[in-house]
Image (cartoon, rainbow, N blue to C red; front, side, top):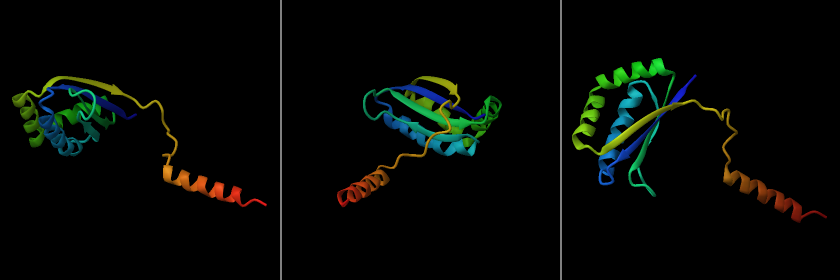
Length: 128
């Protein structure tokens, strides 16, 4: 069973650029160390202090092995040091969740729906 790690960050509102650099670094290191990175999300609109990191991992045992690889990874170590040195992360919380809504329906494609509707309206308008 795959689990998803959600990391909620409280960041310094003036540290957004530093957080974005931190996120880009994890974008390289996390997949290399064995987790399926969904992404890091920085403030855009609304809160200037809330950010997230999200990735999938097989289970908690795989998570422990992944964390050891990440701590030994040169970019991983450098990124941890960068965050400590720059102090843009004020608080960090992790939670592990499992997907409860799957399997999901196919993605709704608005363009296909519009083509479908247009075709129906054209057929209905030419009825004898």
